[in-house]
Length: 78
Image 1 (cartoon, rainbow, N blue to C red):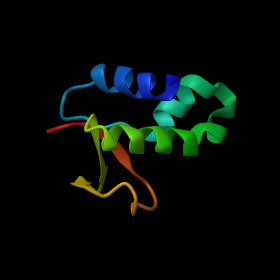
Image 2: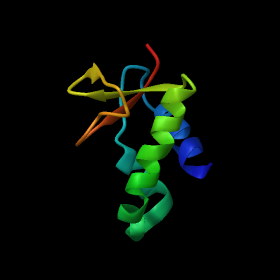
Image 3: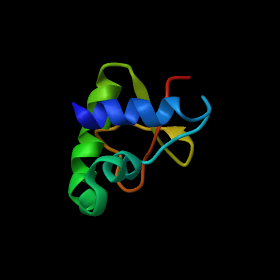
């Protein structure tokens, strides 16, 4: 999926200890319509967590993607 590939590309372009917001991937793909891609970007991130490809954090702490509400960040595995 394009969102998953974009998440990987954005994370690879940053230092290993940096995070991105799902909105970064949505903006990269959606342009001015990026808000329509926010929930699909969050779903893509949850799929990637389920496959063991990344982590979702809130406040720097890894959280369960099925219960995370509000602002989340994405990072590579540590």
